[in-house]
Length: 515
Image 1 (cartoon, rainbow, N blue to C red):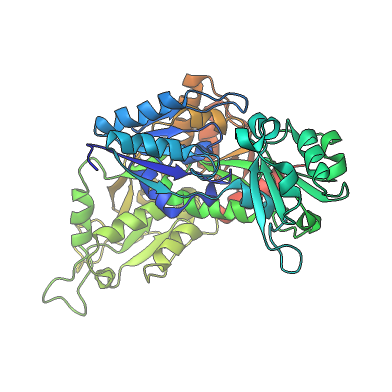
Image 2: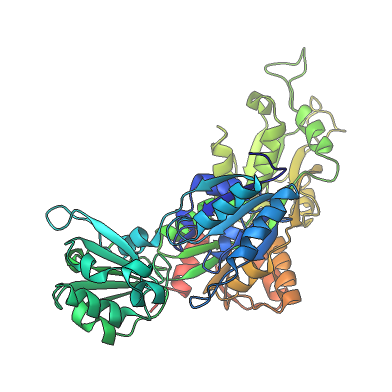
């Protein structure tokens, strides 16, 4: 097929963004435009580049929508040379009308691919602890649509033969059937299925606010059930393999504002605690204004000089790291870790020390108070002139840091007698956030901030759109907390230990699980 652009029909899964496939994430990361459904998790939109266009074509449950217009949109954008991701809830080919879109693309000669997604027909029951098949109980399952056309039309007219399904003996999984559940139950019982047949109705399956309703086929019509719901009808619905509930943050939605390359660990930890993380990267780290030339020159000064004793005399007595980001940038410029030689290394806290340890370097100094002030307080005082072998005109402390960093660390070290060379190792910049993502984030239970820049970026953009910031604000340390307070936020939780562990512990103590 020919075509200047390309379309990917990507299954977004049933709700939990962690169920998106790796291939789906890869395509989103390089999309020019994302055409998404109503039920696609908003945090998935954040996986697309900041400049990518987001087009909402979502339809309400009782609205057929203009599928032809969606087909034309996909064709038109691909013909304009754009990389289009059609993000569809669940699986594109399970009641997703993906087949219609694929046919339209084929007719227009547009190259496309299909990325299957996890369907709610299997995932929602699994999250409720119900396997759709189980040895010794049932060996087959059927997935049926429960909308008006399926229930009220005959099989010859495109409807579902519910009486025949009742006679199959397998599990029946019904999607989009909340409004017609009484009629569905009536027809299944007319086909011979006992009124006592167990039913599990899973509302908002795989989401933190998932609700599981256990009932029977005879009572299904009278039990309050809201859409979206996945109904499992059959003996397996009596099984209770509860694994999804529990954890100190069970059922909570938490916004993570860290740079994308740092947010995955925090998001993973939140999931382990039962929460649903929303990754809304408000910042990113880029090269400093000089492209890293000053950092490279400083690192090169560590290289052993020919003729010097031992492995060479270092140009710096200490290298002081105030963040894990500085460690990453520094070691990206360091050709050989042995260049550190006899240079001592300090880390502002355990996260920075861990970043050093990952590169085979053990920090010589980590303050008990994980802050710039704490590091200065325990840093040795230089009482005598610099060693002549080093050279009195050479800086004795190298401080790779963020461009525009607060001078308190540099000034504190200088006050203790050291000559400090502070070099820009990276620059933290704000990331433009999508309005839909910010709107969804505003309904979350809590938001986590790990830097002042993230606070300023998020608050500025949310304020411009009139979008609320989640009511519970948690900060990783006092510097970030001060920035949040100055931005007009009330900080409810602050980490005692300025690490991811400390931040999550503070959040769990303050927020707790959903009731």
